[in-house]
Length: 115
Image 1 (tube, rainbow, N blue to C red):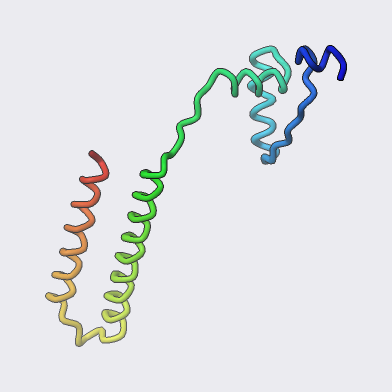
Image 2: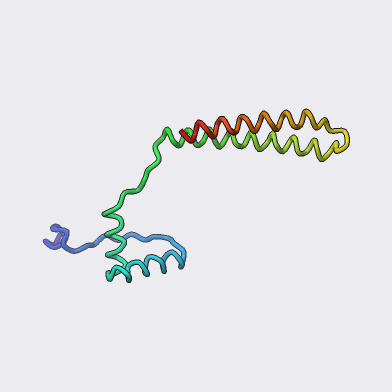
């Protein structure tokens, strides 16, 4: 191996990124504003910034929340189907009670996740 590669003076690794033409143009615009090449801009951006990661606990909580939201969606769809199917024979008081309970539950969970 040549001495140049050993000292890492010359860059020899390459990566490729998939992005839209608009994203590429935006990166190029920012590099131009900074007065540096696109390569130098991307390297500087990656070396001097920190990406906020998501830990396993957050992923687990998001999966639970997504599952919970799917169940609520299912319940709301069932209520809507009954209302549309029975129309004049629907007990609106019962429907209102069900919707109020769902709303209260959603508000409680929203408060928990805001803290």
